[in-house]
Image (tube, rainbow, N blue to C red; front, side):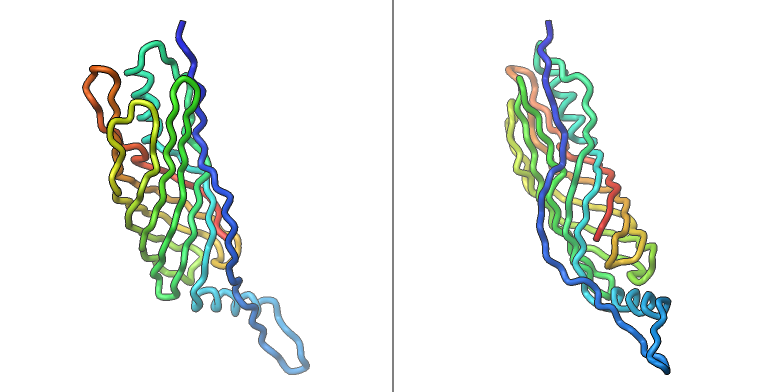
Length: 216
């Protein structure tokens, strides 16, 4: 009878950050009246001409974690991982500069496995990038940088070195308020797995990720 392995793929983070919100500007008209449309235009202009911080949370699919699970399932006898859906939460903090430059720090996606097999992966990302048309409500962007994995688990022979991370995505909505984003990224970090006398195997433990989420 096969053993069962309980696997949870979650991307968890409770991160508290204090950030400055965009200043609300008003335009005085004769008689002291103010117009909401003018306020909205001015707020949009302020958000596009000042450096801002954005917090982002998203649901992320991680293809590399599925590859790790498949390796355990295929290489370790009497082990049945069952059905795994490697989707969970990811987080990043973005510093936006008005000329379009951006710097991102991210934690996750975090992968956890426990039961007959123990495995965890906690990646830290640091990237620089560029946002096209930063004053628009539709903002494509690119970002590149490095990623370091705190990874450990059963049958890991070699932990990964610092890997390269590339991502492309777009944001939609007004910057400085709640907006959405979609991103596809690739992480080159690899770990080496080996069971008993079987040949070792290198696996990209994150590989291609797809994220959809919100920023504020």
